[in-house]
Image 1 (cartoon, rainbow, N blue to C red):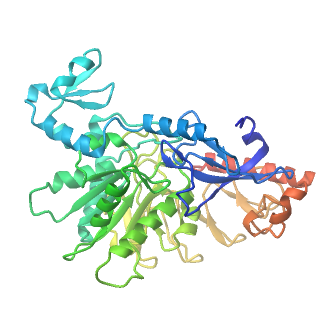
Image 2: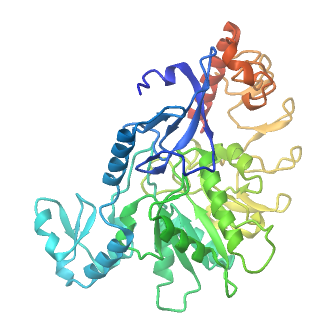
Length: 481
């Protein structure tokens, strides 16, 4: 199917979540997601399936219209391609290989950097032309420092916590008396837990890593790692991994489970929230004692400018001021100011006052908000909240009756606060509808959304929509301003 020009004729895409995984076509990353094209000029709203994990078709080119009939030959070709792109070994085989690897003499333990593979004795000859390095026992306990991070921002980008962030998270979980941590896309936290609480001892804390990077299967047993796609809640090892998760979520002998998730920032919030909800539902079903109305403790790590979307899916979450930083990201660094500070925050349903942010890093406790905040996040008596989202001191606009970023100014023409060089228009401050270009409601609530395919958007409506889109893109690009 030729999809050239698809983006040129489209205002955007909306994910349509369904529970019928059996009829959903699959790509190498598991069941695909169903998208609806939010079209203009009456061109449609046609739905299609695409990869859940990759936004760039160079990484996964799966595409299928929802109403498209697929031949048996094409289905068979897809199945073969999906199998071809799976890991070379199963989780069970990786576990067996690791036991053989640790039994090798120290001078025979090699890691192929080209193939990202721990080599057994009989495999070294086949990798003679590759870059192979010796592996020490300490490196096996910190595989995230041995493996090369995946760096595709549109699919599986891996930004790894700094030691500061990792130890803060672990220290916080220990203080809150959690002893089972479900690490969703957080390999550094998983490593530190295993390092601080090694197996074979009286372990007050255990962890299970769910990650789409199958390379971690080389270092962890079947009860410590599951190959998992968090965008479609797909376990590549199917029933075996699901059983491992269910057993881990079961709280017995006073154990307390918490989920810590660090998704790729380019991912869609709605599918992620759906996957986390399904994990929470599985946790609820495994509960032996206590009320079934209690929410699973969760920490979702994501940039602060996604707050509205996250709270729309999980109203019970609260955003904390703690700045998460990463070793291999040039921008997301703690302690810097203005344009260079990290925008990544913690979203959690754990009582905010119980999460103590370090005073030595510049955090303080606000008794009115009952949470720890950044030192420059001054409490506003008019809004009755510590309003800053980006780590700077915000200012109150008496006209808008809310606090705004320090670089914003009130625009009399727009009737709102915005950047000084924003595209000024009297309609810019109003929330608009993609469907009819009218202010005051979104497309989902549009009374004309069911007849959009039988009418053409007015010329003025298209101009307003274009201006709004340009401004949104500019404000998102300049979030640090």
